[in-house]
Length: 517
Image (cartoon, rainbow, N blue to C red; front, side, top):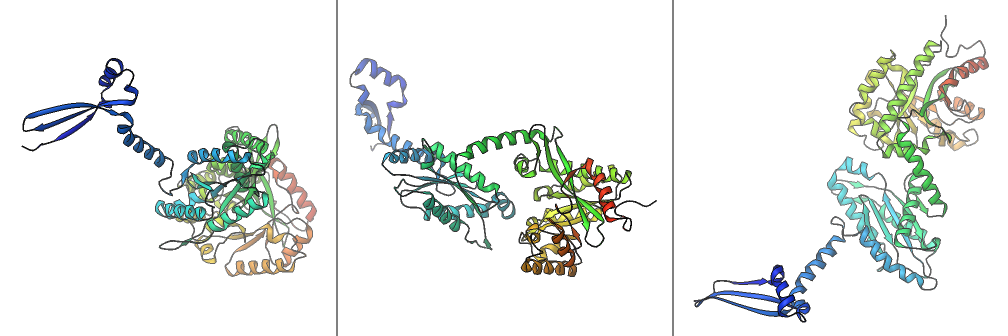
C-alpha cells in the first residue's frame, strides 16, 4: 500500500525537544545540530524516525526568507526607491570613503511644490503616477553608485557617491539637472501635468564631521530656505542656516499660539483715487505685535500658521478687525467706502466661509459693499477650484467687492477671470516700480488698463513709491493707487489722524472721505 502522507516536523518548533538535546543528549554538539522527525503511513502502519541534521541546513531557507523580508522593507512600494532609513545606512558606508584625500560628496533634498493641491485636484491615482514618473526621472539622472530614496509624500533624498571633484559648482549643476528633469511636462492619459520643485543640498566639505544624519539635516535646511523664496528654487547649505532654523522654529512655536494671545493685529494701508485723491479704501495687512521683537511682517509667521491650519482663524480675525474699523470710522465721521481683506486658496474653500462673513457684517450692521475680498491671481490660474468659485460667487451675491490681487504675476487667463465676479484688478508692484522711466512697463500697464476697461473692471496699482510713479499711473488711466508713496501700513489708532492730515493736504476744494453735515 503506497504511503498516504509524509510530514516533516522541525524540532525548532518544540522548545522542550531542543532543551532536552541541549542539556542531556548532545551538550557539546547541539549548537551545530538540530533534531528532525519523519512520520509516514505505509502498509505496515505508522513508521517514525528521527535524525540529527546540521543546523545551517535547516536554517538556510528561514534566513533567506528573513533577508528577503528585510530587503523588501527597505524599499518604497509605490516608486521602488529606497526608504530614508535604508538610504541612511548606505550613506554611512559612503562616508567611509571621505577619508580618502580630496574626496567629497553632496546630499540633495528635493520637494515637489504644491503636491497636496495636485493630489486634491487630480486625485490619488494621478498623483501616484506622477510620483512614479518623477522617481524614474531622478533615478535616470544619477550615476551608478549614487543613491536615491523617497523620504516623504512628495519628497526625495539623493546622496552622491564621493568623488575628488565634488565642489559647489558641480553640486549646483547636479541640482539644475534634477530640477530640469522634474519640471519637464508629464504626459498622462487625459492631459499633461507640470510640476516645480524646491531643492536644497549640502556639501560634505562644509561640515566639520560629515555623517548621514548631518548631511540630510543640512540638505533639508537648505530646501526649507529655498521654499521660503517661492517655488522652483535651489539653495546650498551654509553654516548660518542652523542658527536661522533655530530662530525660525522659535518663531513658529510662538506663532502657533499667538492668535490666542491676541498679538496679531490688522494694520491698514490707504488706497486713493488718481483723479481726486479721495480715500477709496484701505487694505488690511496682518502684523504680529511681538512683545519682545517688535512688529513682525507676515513673511515671518504666515508660513507656520498655514502649516498649523490656522489661516482660516487669521482670515476671520482680520475680517472682524477690518469691519470693527469701518464701524469706528463711521462713528468718527469718516466714510471709507471699502476695506479689503486677503483670502488665500484654502480659506476660500471653507464650506462655512460665506456664513462667517455674513455674521461679521450683521454684527457691525454694515452693508456688504463695505468689505472687499482680495483673491490672489495664482488661486484662479488655470481652472479655478469649483469650491473657490462657488464661495466667491456667494460672497459677491452678498454685495462684497471682489479684487484680483497681484495681477500679472500668475497665469490666469481671461476666461478664468470671467468665471469669478471680479470688480477690480490690482496690478502687481513689479509692473509699477520705475514705471515713470520704463517705456516697456508703461505699455504693459496701458494694455492691462485697456483690458480691464473692456471687461468693465476697475484698476488699482500696488507699490507706488513716489510722486513720479503716482503721476504716471494716473496718466496711464489707472483708477486707484496704493503704496509707500501714499502711506505706509499703519495701526488702526493712526488711521483717523492720517485721514485728517491727508484731507488738509488736498485743501478745502475736495472733501475727502468725510461725511457732510
